[in-house]
Length: 232
Ligand code: CTP
Ligand code: CA
Image (tube, rainbow, N blue to C red; front, side, top):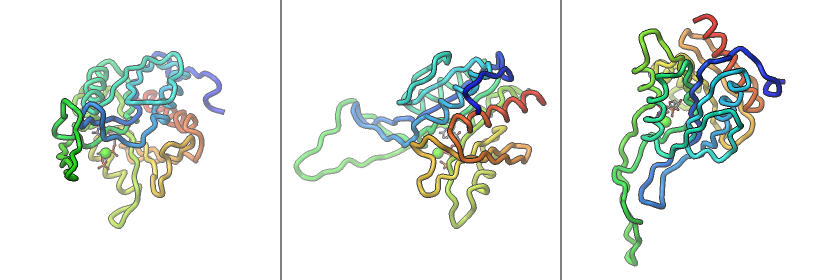
């Protein structure tokens, strides 16, 4: 039922959303990328806008259409995404980091196309770590705790911990107010229209959002945001 009709609980709330996957270039034609389509982030932007928010979407290589009424800033790399988010977070009430920034980038960007030779020589890739945008957003926000910050995490369970244990630890590490957790065991969630998440709160709360369209999940995230802004 969500998504079809407009709401008013986010009227005039300034929401900054990132979506998509970054590209880290090796040379003018090649990059390291990831499988994020941007669908969940675009859905959050759309849901927030339909509830009255003023939405800016920082879109990293998002290939799906962005609905009207949303300001769009296009970026490609994690460095660009970092600068775009940090700059705009100062004038946001809520920041939602739904993008999948690459954790690493090539240490060197070749100015011309890397060529192969006849001897089977292969280039060696050295990677360096990218900035952690979410952590920097948390670190630089005001003492009043504005903006409200929502992170995302795609996790798999492993021998060391369950999906939720990994997610709890990540929420603590990042210091955001919420972490929207996606179980990506067995290739779930990527490039799909539907999603199933748990929203973890820094207050210890855990809200299970049932499997459904990404727009419904987006509205559930907006419900959590609106509730927290009310109580804030
Ligand atoms: N994120 C970010 N900047 C990065 C990497 C991630 O802001 N360089 C954000 C994502 O947008 C997401 C959250 O951090 O909202 C969690 O991303 P994730 O990749 O799960 O976290 P990492 O700290 O990179 O941990 P992992 O080693 O599991 O990839
Ligand atoms: Ca990562």
